[in-house]
Image (tube, rainbow over the protein chains, first blue to last red):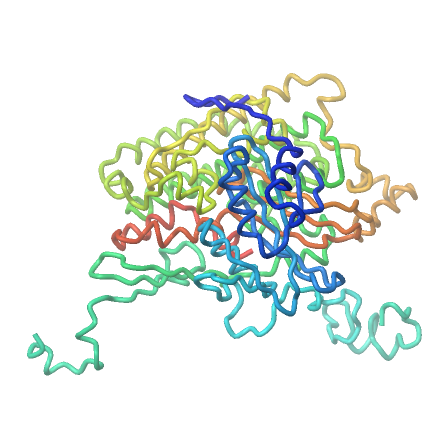
Length: 199
Length: 409
């Protein structure tokens, strides 16, 4: 055990059941899909109440999730009408309990309220999320690209921008063992022998 | 006033302007990395600062969506390249959590040794760079040869020095040889003397104290709100350490202190980092002792039993069909992962390094997000330097330990 000088933690039981109970009491139907995976309770909330949930988790005395660990987005292209998910990781650093929740939004109108008013740390995290997924954080003080160039007109981490297929053969890359005038990968010599899934 | 300037050809509006805009970076020697600060100055006083990052963005999160677990390890090397082993181990621990691998005690201790060595190397660089930026180059030059000892240990264990790609899912690719243990012993013996000398050079040095005390302070409350973790948060007075609150790799068995500061200024950050180096030495000593105490089969084991993700011995690959098949499956990444969604974090040298990993049961992650401590606390830079002097801005930057690789992913 590590030694703490002059500080003692009071260990209270902040169980997943208690968190779930408090949240459902407060928000009712608007929070759902509670499940615990790998030690973290996760749930989904309606996107209209994301700030209320953040505020409740951080300001309620029994919950005390004062630390916003992480904020990012995930793209689920098959989830029609709810393609983009913004994921919040909250941490109660006193009792070491983490909780994760997602809000889903339509990719056509990806508006989600900004958390910058509650957490200063959300500022750049939201800018990064906007940069890569195009989530429009309503009320953000400075919502512009952070990693990519300002002129970029698409959001590169969405799934419709696939990475290069390792088995593509249309490139003349002889020095790296792909394509070229002879050998493996040449379209002419391999025509008809390539399995359909690699074309 | 205007009569003074009437013979000089200045652009219109120049004389009315009372503030100066200064571009610090992206390739300024004082920024120690590729990022830019646009600073608005009134004389030498900072009125506003705006940071631009992303100059070396390499799209790791996107690339990772098409890579197998082992192909992602080299990507993590290039996050915080001053302490690559920490990133590698954090990643492997995340994978092990997803796959549910049981790690033998000896592997935990070996990992702890490497992780603490990496922490020392990282803190050493940061603290000596603070010295450089306050005008004392000697310390930096002097401690470099002791970082070299750490790099030699890495080299003995994995063959690489800077971007290490160290370890495998479940343990290490090979056991530490005797030379590696000898080198660790040598380091443990020689380093305390050097660290003491380094402290003599800086800790009570009048010039160093004048330069760092009160430069870039932050309160505990603001630090938490800004998502600070690691030494920077502890310097502000919050004793949050991932090794203590959610121990991984058997950290709960080790006896060490968590140093905390009070004001969160550059001097406190320096002291916290220095103190952590002493604690790391204590941890390494204990780990060496624990390894020495292991008996029988436990004393030689260096990886867990997870044939799906741990390469079989090479001689078996050449002679046995089963091993050959596994070798290819692992190298080509033809193994489907379990479905799951997890977040795992470790105490990296800069703070909480987190991996948010979504697996949809395929061969590559569906989504992988790195929580990079540097990126998160750099946004506090403006608040830290506002109202200070230009020279403080430089020293705050180096004492936050900003690593461009980690910031830009």
